[in-house]
Every structure is written in structure tokens, then in C-alpha cells.
Length: 126
Image (cartoon, rainbow, N blue to C red; front, side):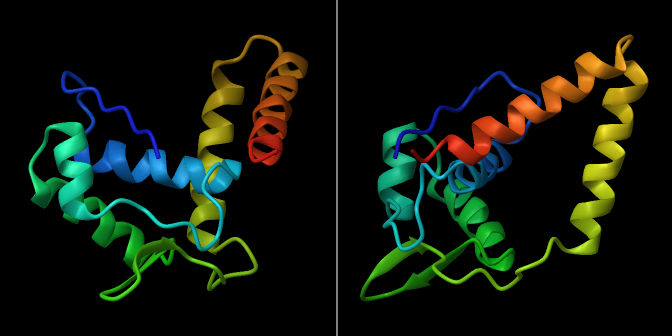
């Protein structure tokens, strides 16, 4: 698993790690059951504090994206808890799409871009 963090970004490091793992899962680059690096290993690879990686992993566990077993390590969840999009995600997605539509001069071009991004995500694991 290859993650890149931006030490100069205004986005917190733990959030960058969390977001990249979520993107990896959503795009299919990280598959259910796939083993993730240990907290220490990822922290060493990225050159950051282990507590930062631990915070990202804790968030991902709380969201049901990963599971940790002392014997088997940390893995991508095999059976997501939700089969439907939770209402808070739907609300956030609706707001994000509304912001994009409000800032777009061409609604057809905006829609095409949204569909392109969705297609990339859905085809990312192949």
C-alpha cells in the first residue's frame, strides 16, 4: 500500500491517511480482507509519529472500514456493516454535489465530471 502525505497541507496528517485508505477501498485498490501495514510500520514509512497513524486507524475502525485482530493484524473489512448509504453520508454527498453545481457554469459538464469520477472509482480495482 502506497500512501502519500503532504506535510505542508492544511489537512491534518491523520485525515490524509484516513482519506487515502477510504479512497483505496472505494476504488477497489484495497480489497476486502487485504492486510494493511502496522501502525508502527506505516508511521516509519511515512516518517511521522505512530500516534498520528493510530488516530487514522481508530477513525477507520469506528467507521467500519477496517478491523484489527492482534493475531491477524489490521485488514480491510470484508463485510461492510451497511448495505445502504447512511443518511449522514447522503446528506454530505448532496451538499458537496450542490456546491459543485453552484460553482459550475455548465450543468452538463458538471454532471459529466461527476459521472467520470464515479466511473473511475468503480473501475479502479480492475
